[in-house]
Image 1 (cartoon, rainbow over the protein chains, first blue to last red):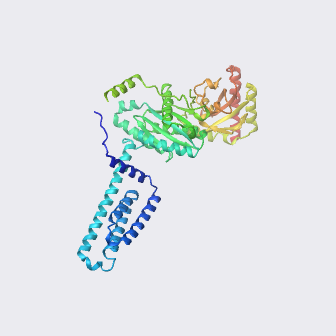
Image 2: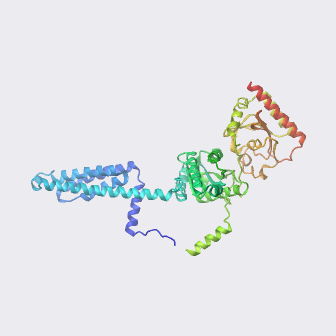
Image 3: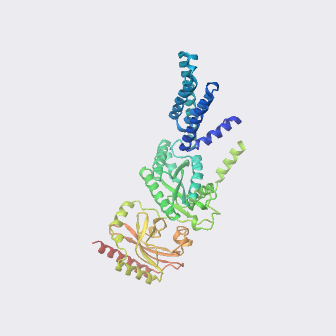
Length: 327
Length: 169
């Protein structure tokens, strides 16, 4: 049976949108907002005096700090808030000290501190579990590199970044040749070790801001940026050689088939189409002898129409249809 | 239909091959008159506008001597000679690059120097390691040359190897 994701109420969805926006805030902006908010709150607290309770504003600021800048910042804001609350409303104004007994004052201070700490911990805990959920939704659990969803998300961002900077991109689709043989002869544990090894060293073989992802099974995809398409060719060839060496060093008879689209970022209308095209090119390599690289220089060809695509085998199509029927 | 090309795979013993390249003397032979004469002779023999000695070096192919080419190197990925040197026993002859799956989408075919015909004789070091090729290139497709001409090109390749050897010592 298909498992459905948990549903959310309208209020929850609104809150999630706010949280999402705040997660995109640069740290410097968050610090500035926090500082301005804190000063404004202290002034408001001072002006209104003990008549009006502004503890909710202090709490909100502590939560904001904890959410955007970490638990320590939240606790710091909380401590400042407790002191200011006490100073302005508790024993700051003349005539107030006599009204509140020291025991009651201490009780109030401890209560405020504890509630601050609880709120700060809740905010940072929520942020952590959200970050963790995102991480696991975009990470391949076996190899620790990006998964398909993570790659898709980062791909769109990187393509528009490269478009702004007028760079070129290499999108390479990689499929291991002979991997099934490793699984069959040495067991799935050996196959998994090989995949992990390949993913770890493959991701190391490219630059930190380039992408390396496992799409599924023994299929990987990588996105490299290059100043020009000319250098894109060089990067694709060098990468295929490095990956081949990594596989050779595993001691198994495994090689890799690779299809690479080399393109000026400004040419890209649909990143998804580009991935499919690289997949199609890889499939061509598979059909004609494996263990090779094919490169399509899209900058030297008229338009990106009629990109290669992997034909869906009848068996797979039938399975897809069955699944669609069942759903 | 999208056109693509296949960069030559690097040999399994690429590190040894690279060492042979480093020690060959070709990398320091830029503009050598004797090698230049060999390349000129090759171009005249086949009547092609382009001829070169191409040495496959790390991620580039380097032309210590050439005629009809502007660049002194191109990426290894686009190198015809990197294909030619994979089989040292015979020359690589491509009569029409646009009709060959390995080369149709090659940037050297799709743009300058617009290679159509390519003939490359592998340059092989004494220890058997291939270094690159002595090649002649035309911008129009051609028939495959006869054996006599291939033998003459092989002789020129041998002369080039001898010259590099002399330069090194």
